[in-house]
Length: 290
Image 1: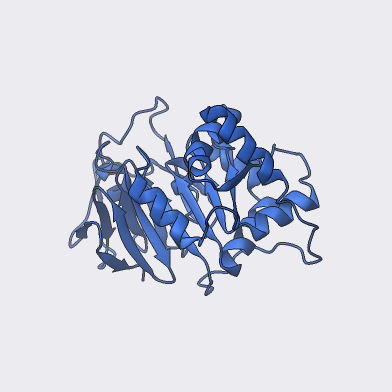
Image 2 (image 1 turned 90 degrees about the vertical axis):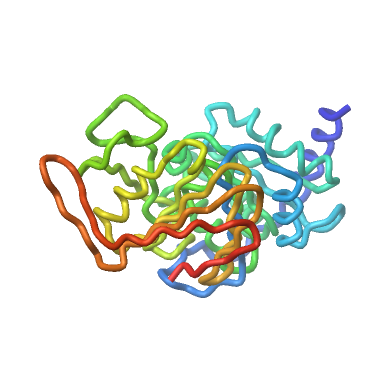
């Protein structure tokens, strides 16, 4: 029954493809004012509260608008479309998944459907896998165009990490074996890559933050890159970004780390700093991204 409902809605979403607009997609400029919003989820369970707020911000309702799901972070994109789309389908929303592939030229119709989607949702998985498909392509430009024009761009876990201009990959330069967090604060260990750049260039997002104790990773980032505003979002929690403000939505906390004095010291292969500022925000609270 649920499969049939999801399949029917997914097929209906294909009818949302519209003729291509004549203009080509352009990347989002630094500090550009946009009409859209970002809904950045730290991973974990997508609660009804998160889903309903995300849908409301996109002004979606049954028979009005559609959701585009981008599953390219996942090693099993068809399953990602299924799991990501089920909650939208059960709410009666029109949904379509676009599994773009690296090296393939996306059709003009799909790009235009992406550009005009009221809600774009990026699934979890591996953020580097996602960016390997979209970086430097018209897909990234179409996402930026949608955000610029008033759409909500949402993502969870890996889909949260890609919102930054400089993206945490999850890897470490000095320790090739993966661990959920950094075991120490070391210089030259932070591994960053290019993200979508929908946030201001100095904002860096980390996810699963409190549950996986990722403090060392974000502290490393703000020490080695002292201009960075580090935003750690816990599971089942999101930030809603409009302009230069972020509101916390969901069940847990958002940890924001700043290095206002641009402090950084090194000694015997370890990082130090003084005067760091750490704020912990709860649901309903907001903070500046300046």
